[in-house]
Image (tube, rainbow, N blue to C red; front, side):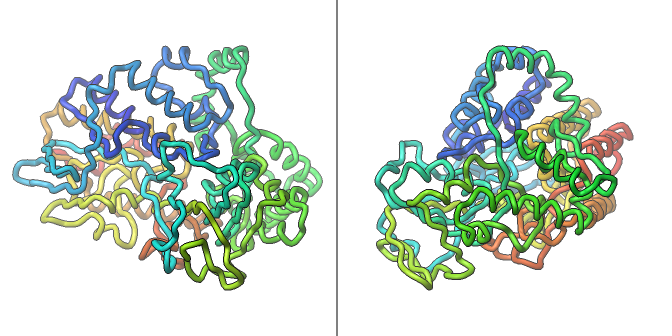
Amino acid sequence: MSGIYQIKRLADLGVDAVLFEGEDDLGGTWYRNRYPGCRFDSESYTYGYSFSKELLEEWHWKERFSSQPENLRYLNYVADRFDLRRHMRFGARVERMDWDDAARRWNLRFANGGSHSARFVVTSLGPLSAPTMPSYEGMDEFEGEAFHTFFWPKEPVALQGRRVGVIGTGATGIQVIAEIADKVAELKVFQRRPNWSTPLNNSTISEAEMDEIRDRYEEIFANCAASPGGFEHVPRWGFWDRTADERRALWDELYSQSGFAILAANFAEIFFDEVANREVSEYIADRIRGRVDDPAVAEKLIPLDHGFGLQRLPLETDYFEAYNLPNVELIDLRETPIERFTPAGIQTSGTHYDLDLIVYATGFDAITGAYDRVQIHGVDGTSLSEQWRDGPSTYIGVLSHGFPNLLMVAGPQSVSGSTNFPRAIETGVEWVTDLVAYALDHGYSRIEADAEAEQDWVAEVIRAHERMLFRRSKGWFTGYNSNVAGHEEGRVRYQAYFGGAPRYRAKIDAIAADDYRGITLE
């Protein structure tokens, strides 16, 4: 999403620009994640690009929450519609970047042995593009099929009649489990920690409804720009001004609406007030209990280590009902942890499970992981991954001191990790493009964040983060990932700006208006 729009803007600017993509085709998230059930959890018409009126008029979203194949078709349509493929080089995975301060250029080296030199490098790596695997004894001994959801094969995967194990019940796991539960012979769900989840409430979009959406696009994108999360859903204040019955009536209404309504249009107090959060958490817990037939299973699906909305909220379609099927079994790894993999399946402390296919729905090294997988060396050979070892340090999520001319679209400590991603993408791409144009117009060849300005921004990110109840939650909002060294519980990484999209946009616009305050251009 970000790379496609960025190359479009640079091409429009008339600069000599090329886009390098490690995969063999475009699409990013929507190219690689082909697993069953993969789809938007943002309303389709708020996810697509807004930069072209013609594109908005031409494209018909078929579902309120579009599926992966349709999303990939959309991105290919955009690339072809604006003749962008001529700027793209596929199979060009960057493995190393070195800054030459004398030449004021970046030297790139590719995994295929190629190289390239560029004045500016713009990263469009995405926040969830570095998959992580668990570490269990004997994983390489399993004789059946096994893969991470990120590496789901292009070819159809046989499910019927097979015994399938899914490890993980985060956003991806929830989508996979709900989609395949009634298609496999047996489904064993290995749950490390339960997540809150609420109904997606998807539906098709008719021609008439799509015409109405087209008429509303200007209003839709204005609403997204004005809301903290980049959706049409807008939070409200006044939790304590309503009675308990009135609050519950509102939650009943929001629970039946589509998308993130129950989260993003809820009372804002649930993110700051522990008592308010406890009440809404109990409401969602009751909803789960009402959808799962076995009370013991229902309780295992209710999180106890964090309140509702304090980690990334997965949306689902009949996920909880899957556990009512006779072929589906929930294995609580807190009670019976995995001891090892065997040639035939998985051995827990309780029993052995024979499996034909194992699916790792174990998530990503979020926000900074994709940067760590490229050896990036800045001024005096400083390593970016080493500099960010304990957490990223950036100026407005776009620049990092010591790494001149490295411009990040929707990078760490921007608003991208806390909002409807494409809305943050367009903000980031437009700001980066304007900065490049400003530098070229004024004859500047070196752009670097000032160290003091960067530290001020990091302090602002920390202040916004520490106001929130999720400030110590075990999820990617705080950089937690049990499968990544240095990201363990108790080590908070301030990776995203949680001050809201409107505040972020106002701050970066003010910086640009003040001749890019906090950035040294020379």
